[in-house]
Length: 350
Image (cartoon, helix red, strand yellow):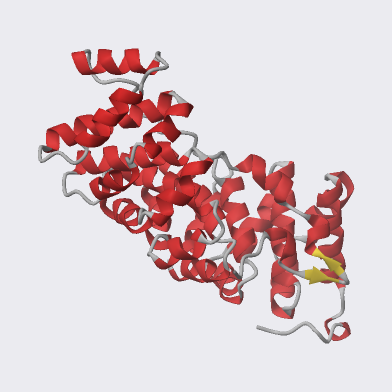
């Protein structure tokens, strides 16, 4: 597995980047998908009252067994009702997630995800997401063939199905070996598309999933090829949005790939990063300085661009007022930018 992380992406002047780790900061920039955030119950009916009583009861086993059987019904309406109720049972009572999986619900729910009926597909995706919140279920969900149907839902489902598919894939990607399988199943381009065109929740879910998946080198390449750099630069340039930190942390993962560094420069990322060092929050300044340090480490041309963009004054300020890690990054980058071109034989032009 060629998995890596921000903290191991490069070495500068004998110090590993792990000495300047960003992981503590990144963990607070992303919130995990906890459960679907749709309505609790449908309109009042005998089924919803039964479900409510079951959620409040310790005796849901019989109902779960009936609902799992109904997933194989020839009636789409019965399948929808069963999937919806299982979704809510799994959402509202964590112990039900194991019960539902042990009752054999995972494979029929995965089949439902491939349905041509958009609402049935959405219920199936959301039920699988809620089951994946139990760590014991994640491996079985992946091994039962959920990844490809979830990717299809991510590409063409309803807005809710797409968001919940992104969350479910995020949950499955927390098993390291699933990251390559998810990437090879075509998940990266539709996640980039959701990051670009989704509502705010969809954008956050897509960004979090991409951050998890792009610890694997081949997924970084897929993200670059899907045009993520242009999008990340645009998101980071809007300092008033809530996407600056998340976008920057995804970018920091991609910087170990030369193609990502070239695309960042081509898409006008240097002025955006310098502005963040100057006027961003403390965390934003730190991550922007770290990205610029990665960019300039072995490329003289990029160093010249960064210096000409006016990076040194805000970096000096950061070296004096930032956190300990931010100061270290700023000082290392200042030293690099101030080196005469002839003193570092390891650096190269573009």
